[in-house]
Image (cartoon, rainbow, N blue to C red; front, top):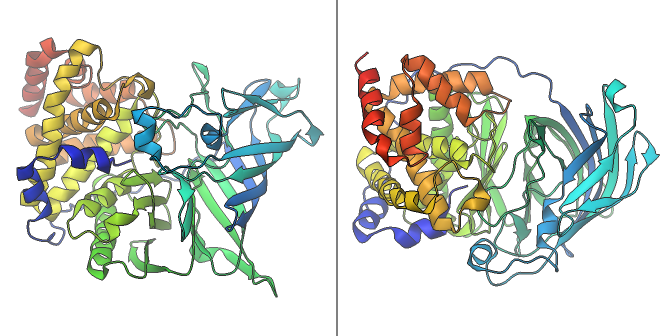
Amino acid sequence: MWRKRWVLSVIVGVVLAGFLWGKPWSGLAGAGEKNPKLPDPPPAPVTYRADIWMDMKEKVVTGTLSVRFAPQDDQAFFHLYPNAFQPNADLSGQNWEQVLGKQREPGGISVTDVRVDGQVVGVDYEGKTNTLLRVPLAATWQSLKQTEVEMSFRLQVPYNNGRLSFNDHAMWLGNWLPILSIKDGDGWRLDPYSSIGDPFYSDMANYHLRVHLPAGYQLATSGIESIAVVTETRPERRSTYELDAWNVRDFAMVIMDDTYRQTSSKVGDTTVNTWWQLGDDPAVVDRLHQVATQSLAYYSKQFSLYPYKEYDVVKTGGFFGGMEYPCIVFIQDDLFNRSDPIGEAVVAHETAHQWFYGLIGSDEVREAWLDEGLTDYATMAFLEQLDETRAQSYIHLRRSQSRAAEAYASRGLNAWNSVDQYPDWKSYNDLVYGRAGIMWLTLKEAWGAERLHQILRNYVVENQYRQASGKRLVQMFSEASGADATSFFDYWLGLKLDKAAQAEEWMKRVKHE
């Protein structure tokens, strides 16, 4: 996610003038020729099949869901993230207000008819506002290669400034479908929906959805719309889309009315679609679309080929500037009519998340710096290719955040904290974006892009379609450099300021080898 509101509130006048009112972005230069191709993915461990009905008047989604997976326990847990917005949820305080806004209406998801391998089981909610569903599995689970959990659900979409909401022309569904929790070395990960960060952690899965839309609506999803099977019923003219998404961590969707239009281009084998509305500034729409295509091409050359067939950049509401999901990103509506290029930075950031979060998974709850830091570094590297002078204003902002982050050491905060440990959005932004992003930029400036990006390409290849970890990434830099990198990461991420000299020594010694 690219947090626009807080960032805009702290940009000083010089930075604002340089970043917002300089010359337009130039064409992409120096993008490199690496373009490494990834090997084929392993079989996805989970398969979701759903039949979904959209009531756009009432903002209600109903459906049935089937989930097949290899059991790891005598029970399984599903996250029901929409229940974070139930009427009885405590969503008070400044942090929630920044996420949801002052104008809001509750929502939530109810589950019925839960079955395990065809046998009816009870509905067992857990969590303060029923944000978890516990499902008992067969006593013989250890002998089963696969088990199937089925359920029916009804989702009342809440109204707020968040990832799951609506306006007069669209409904955006982020983190909406019941999703299987991860069980890792610490047990079942039942992390709550926090007010700060992106509190999500999910494995790769295959999705097959049948989505029924009323007349006059269209959609963009994590699936491949260009090959979707579309049928229409008469006289209602309700459209049914059969959609597939393979090897993705989630399935997001935006339902749009007929005020939306689509601009499309090809980047290699990928179709890039930018969804905008009649009345939007055509020049701004064109710039956002160009950044989507150019950044996708740049990251493909620098880190690995983008392995998916479609990428959708969609105008929505929301507080977030931009929000990433597999093969689709939500972009805040006002960015489609701004004469300044902040929207372009947002699109570049969310596009980088297609690698760092989407393709290479990580624990966004306990190690938010891992995907956000790499994503923001990739954003800065891309912006430098477009126009180095103007990119320096964005980089200056991140450097200011990185320097400010050192003050958090005395408060026991650092970039390794889990999202629930940050007291506010400012500390989260300073540490997870500014500090972590500038750490990578500092390495690039010391070593050169090619040396750094070669290690990052190895990181991508090793962790594609899997879960990466910060510990392993530190180890990879130690191995690649031939010297222990711990002090460098301790200084930058752990805010162990007494290790500044050791961190500098490691970076310079490795630079000259």
